[in-house]
Image (cartoon, rainbow, N blue to C red):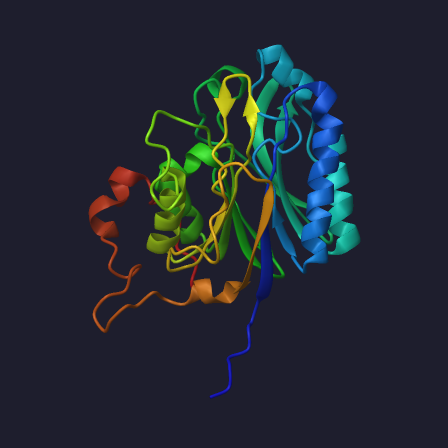
Length: 297
């Protein structure tokens, strides 16, 4: 039997590294992100996902410090550098930054491609002290149509809210890029296999939505905050494609996937279809899905 030909072949890379907070570290963080993205390109990746707040680190001392790290989109220096990289190497790049829009700050992810800036997502669910610096996202959960497939974005704490991957999938996302600064919380942090709770939440979201999720986390420590690592790329069946990254090592994970396979109905037997079996007649009004549509797959 001959192998089926991939309709939308993509090599995804998630980059796990240690960006440090402080304006004197911003340029180094940016250069490190570009160097690691170049390593991913040299290994064949054409969709590269960097962590949340890629160029700034995470633990700001106060709101003024968050402003000091901020830039505008798409004409800020880091976004311009990432855009130039995506254009030069003809790849798709996802990165996180502090966005300033007038006097508001947002924890934002940008999607860049061979033709330049594509779009952004502002983090909707703010974690802990983020509520002191950032305004909750106000642009919903956009999905971006690209030549390699439909790309959705979410950021860190968002994965704890099942509505986010569900709404992205209902709008046709083939892959969700998840940018993270997953922090250490009260134990237990890891199970015997080295996976953390965020690993399982990512796997579950991929499984119940029949969608790929590429989750890039950071490592390292800032003041009293430590970061979990555990980056992964989950397949449409929920299981990690390849390994889950360790908690404390800089690394790049890769997966060769056909994004179009996310569009096939996940029918596990003759009587069950994951999306067809949804009881939207019962719970749409409660969950607020009514103004969203399910993109035909």
